[in-house]
Amino acid sequence: MRSRTSRRGWARFAALALGMSATGVAAGPFDAIDRLVDDWQASRVFSGAIVVTRDREVLYERAAGWANPERGLAFSVTTPTDSASLAKPFTALLALMLAREGRLDLDAPVVRYVAEYPHGDTRVRHLLQHSAGLPDYDAFDALFKAGAPVTTSAMLRELADRRAPPPFAPGTRFEYCNLCLDALALAIERATGRGFEALLRERLWAPAGIDHALLRPARLHALPASRAVGHRWRNGKYEANDAEDFEAFHGASNLYATARGFARYGSAFANSAAWLGGAAGDAVERVRLNDGAITGLTLGNWYCDGGARRCYYTGHHRGFYNLMYWNAERRIAIAWVSNSTVLSTHRAPFERALVAVAEGRPAPTEPPETVPLDDAKLRKLAGEHTIDGAGRVRFAFDGARATLWSAEGVEYSLFRVSARAFYAPGVDALIGSTDDGRLVWSSIFVNAVAPPAAR
Image 1 (cartoon, rainbow, N blue to C red):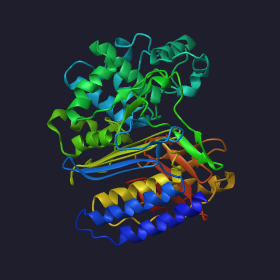
Image 2: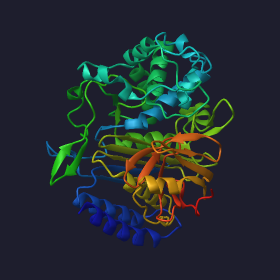
Image 3: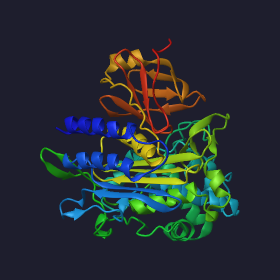
């Protein structure tokens, strides 16, 4: 039922969005967003909130569904929700601000600030760049199963006890890294002698006008009663798909804020807020690895277009999915938050359409439907592809692991998110295939199908 309803909603939305005026934002175009949200909500696909601003003024706000279906608590634009990775642009900007003030040296070894850090050759900059080679949280199962709060320091001490070197020399590869941003937040605390939440509140949240924001406590029951609870609709009922207990680490995630708050943060960049200072320019500077290769992320943990005038970031954790987007040319900011386990294949098309409506442009034409990716299809997909907007890329599959090489020569690990798609952190793209082996690339900025692969 879900997929059939969704396709009807997309067809209705496309007809409205493609026929709208391209001269600017008006009330009518947002009717198309309302119709799609209504359709999603009716089929229990979506609950969450959307906020669109221009020149810091709200153009559109919409909340739908349940913040907590068990308690009958409706979602609103002021419902605190799990940021997932939307915490990263906050942590990165704070680090860049402190670096400009001489309070945090990005080229210093991390061990200068965090004595328990396991690798002496890693620089603070490598944490920002996702090039430090730290493992993800599943490497610390024993800590998480102990039934006590798990801190960043505890994970770093365990790594130090293992005496294992990083899988690559720091700065030489990109590997999306949650623990890197947690370690960066810890370095910020040690460098300043201040609590991380106090610094966020003083340096970022207050200037941006963000209220109802907090770093989550280790125990979920200590969160505000009004917060969003992650869930999904399955077998005719709601079931929990919430954050986990005992997470006492911050920097990469575990920040709670509202749709309005995330929109206000994006609006600061869209409107070149004075309080950002020179760190705003640093935040949109593309990351360069040691060999000069440019990755898809910026130092501020944004995905930006070629001119760095339109940027965004996404966050996904269990039932939660979020977007922050800003456009400095049109001074528009968008926040979209959800706690209802929105399908990965629905996200980028909706984001592209939402951005188009907000910016007064026709919605883009969607690529053809992708096919299930078994080993035979993956081997057929292997080779070089030319993607309009991303250049010449190479897809590789060795029977166990899929990777993508960008036109800049950077390797990205791919993670399967559905039978039809892989996700590429670092370029924020869903990668799929047509039946004849053409690579499909789906992201906010790039929405294209390649010609047949060259081998």
